[in-house]
Image (cartoon, rainbow, N blue to C red):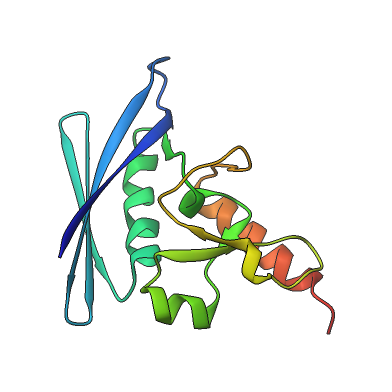
Length: 136
């Protein structure tokens, strides 16, 4: 199955709207993700699409670009059960001190007014802070 999703890119210093086309391909246990933007292509293969997007985001950072989607939002991260069922296409919006609810599920390539696009390192830091905020 090949499926395409278009995502806005922010940053990069161009001052204009940019878009990237993500092509998703699932073959057996491998989730392949290709990102085409400007005249460039970045590819990643991982066990799930969230991790593949994570790898592609590192390549986009070289150009100062952030995908404007839930998969690149500081407050969104996959939860194990959801990740296994969706191959990383669904993730949870998280709030400090709270476990995610079913209503917090989002498609990683969708966007919304609550998307907070961040670079990969900041995303990891937010995740660690959120984990530390949970009741023991």
